[in-house]
Image (cartoon, rainbow, N blue to C red):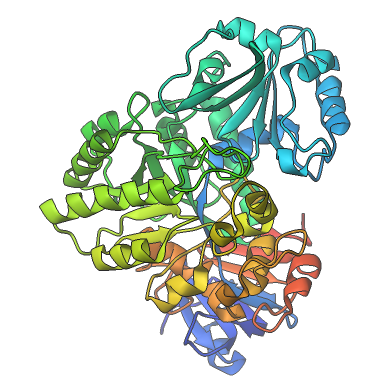
Amino acid sequence: MGPVADLVLRGGTIWCGAGLPVAQALAAWGGRVLAVGSEAEVAPLIGADTRVVDLDGRFAMPGLYDDHLHLISTGLVLGHVDASPQAAPTLDALLDAVRARAAVTPKSEWIRARGYEQQKLDIGRHPHRTELDAAAPDHPVWLTRACGHVSVANSRALELAGVTAATSAPEGGVVEVENGTLTGMLAENAQNLVSNHIPTPGVDELIDAIEAGGRQLLAHGITSCMDAAVGMIAGMDEIRAYHLARRDGRLPVRVSLTLLGDPGTSIVEPCFQAGLVTGVGDEMLRVGAVKIFLDGSLGGRTAWVSRPYRGQPDNFGVQMLPTQQLEGLVADYHVRGYQMACHAIGDMAIGQLIGAYEKALAAHPDPDRRHRVEHCGFSTPEQHARMKAAGIAPSPQQVFVHDFGDSYLAVMDEEVTRSCSPLKTWLDMGFRPGTGSDSPVCRTDPRPNLHQMLTRRTWKGTVMDAREIVDNETALTVYTENGAWLAHEDGFKGRLQPGMAADIAVFSRDLLTAMPEQILNDTVCELTVLGGRVVFDRNAA
């Protein structure tokens, strides 16, 4: 007698993956998919202890894979002031939120806020330190742009950090001074001048953030993610926090850990000495790639580009590292056995990274290492050809086009911006790009991401090169199997076939046939299954 299923889903539409038959029922046993097929085919696997879930016509699919986010930060910012356009569309609303937080925060304690985008504020610019001063004169305030590459400090924060108008920006950073005075805006590496003075969260707080962020993902049908810069906030304590969360049953989702590899803040050496290299771990928590930052963000005018920013003829963004230094780091990490997943948004940064990967792969060939270009926003056809030849993978977050496309058009030529993140072009070339949120840069909600892939429209309705539109099934494949492939995890998840992980998301609407606006405005995740266990049920929440 064969095994009796632990869980059976039946009575709905079950999309198992591209090219696979759509099923009516699925059985899971021991955390794996046991069988898929018709209700009659799965019925014999139901026993007395089987949990049977009636889908009642709903749509089930493999759990989503957010291929690039910051899980610890996602949890931590839940306690920060929400400065996003949804919560604070005007400067007054933003300052009111800071003022309200100051009223309940002991004097001299830090107030942190995140999520503003200057192009979406009614003032069309970054807030000024003096405006933050007026809202919270007795507190140091640290306001971070949505992208995370630009922040504004108030006067008290700058004083605590010892930053003055005469302070030199570190290499790869910007300290903005106008008419001989600080505006409060700091970009890229210059942010560390202030952020290093903000108290670092302890391990318990990090574990709380992992759990809170992970539960948010489950509520959206996301069962796996890549944490894209582990070590950035608290160094090796983040590695400890993840493993303690895993040990104690407080890790809600499967996580691939991308280790911060930037010079000066890298955690790669202690990880390597502990044997933590790419692939080490289990199916819940494993070591993934190493990350180096090469530039900033286009909306923040810090992405390293070959054309100057609109209205700023001398601004080509920020180059974070000299090429020789980057090539040395990539070569070293490559030889040690790490996959690489480096941040490069502008075409100059992308070209610099491709060159470093090409040299490392030529010296020590590995045709399936799957080195990644994270974001890869403004790549060129010539760069695509080089990436394809070398086995380098674009790793975009398509929701950037939805959230930031209009900001891109405001700061850069249309010829460059409208063809950003060219999803269909990459797919037609045989690449396997995934997608994600880069949360807390964008929200973890997958609906704007799916909507963008199906329409190439921004939140304002601007169409960003309709030639890059894909169909529903392709978008779902990008969000599942492709994300797993990028992380070398496609051997056990991303499709619902016997033997694969029983990670399942159930939505209120059939995502194979739904119109884009229905997905964006009228679809919710109703049930999430991880390893054959129901871990989120909207009706029970």
